[in-house]
Image (tube, rainbow, N blue to C red; front, side):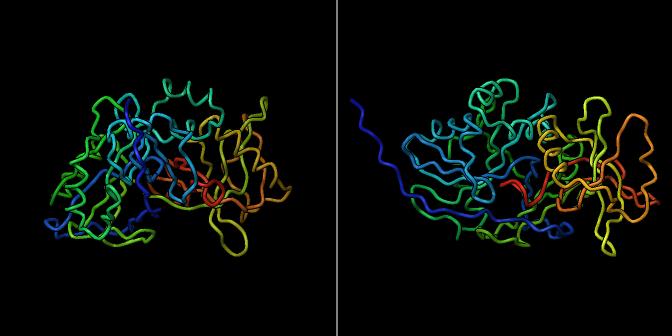
Length: 324
């Protein structure tokens, strides 16, 4: 008869955050990791066979990702607190944030179980904050990385992986991630301590595309179905919004339905934009205005000469859902 394992009491952490800045020139003192386009999580494994997953803001996320029970199976009676990113990998091996958003929107257990096969997720682990009750945050990155690699977490065909890092070679990391269509890299000083809850310049994020927080001032609807085609976005200016364009790419079906509910509560007869946007005269869409109470993140290639976002991609709402 096997003895029940006693769980290790683990402290609660807040994730350390990276700063957007130019990449450092002294590459020898830095490591580079992939910047995964997913959901940041802290994973608590007390060593008794259970797993507890928390979002960046501390919201409970365990039931959304039952695949991550594999972390406890891999660690056995080893207790740990892991920092990582949940991603949904596409057929080419690159993260698909749209697929992940579809998965994150599911709430019913039967839907989540079905999605384990249709839209599986993978936990990319990049740091260990605690091991068997011993706090590791005061160790430098290089030492924590060595402790992380000691853990049997890298499953080539499983839902848990420990991705490689580039030591002292940031440029190769940039080139590799660009070639594979990955969002960017995070450069981390080899001597950096883990600073829970702080945005630190010891971690620098570099994206291949630019991102922007925008306000939602309306949407384009499907004339027949009434569904959401795209959202109209802008930046606050002189008590109104300066129009930046319509964003539809990246909005999943379920997220679009949820977003439409929020926008309809804010619908108004008056445009919040300065002037009338010039590109809304489409016969296959209906125009709706909304009070600009919602903020979202979008990525884009560049701003056109007319001040419109080129190739915008929806990344998600800010300050509404727990993951924002």
